[in-house]
Image 1 (cartoon, helix red, strand yellow):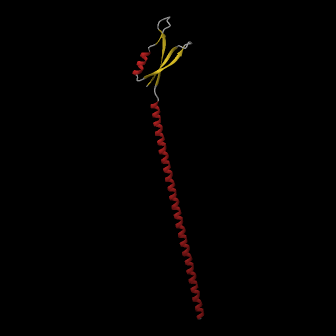
Image 2: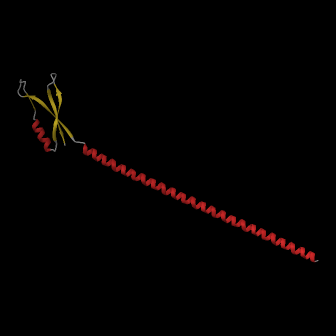
Image 3: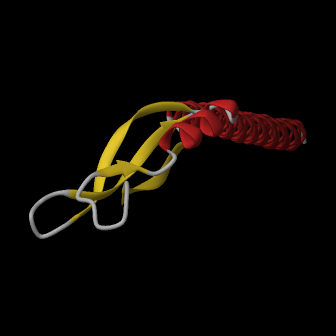
Length: 149
């Protein structure tokens, strides 16, 4: 009877040890699952931070592009203003040679002094002339007076 009692106690101890081992195994599995969950959350957080960093980098690049475009527009505007300032407003007025008297070979320019005076009053400056029309012998028949503002 004692042997049976001892065997029952041994069996009970073995079952208790088996149960403790199973609980330990369950605890280790739960601990492992918690660690896996923690790793997954850390990876998710790292991915979100990376995404935020990429978005910030993209926003910075877009800002830089916008600033470059703004600068280019300003430079273009300055260049156009400089070009406009550099462009001079030229004006050409044709004056003709006319005979002094009927049948005479003598010629004179028609009213060139009055033309020059009028243009100076308008803010132009006389800078020269260009032969505009020649006869068969190479004599000038008319010329363009050139003025610049």
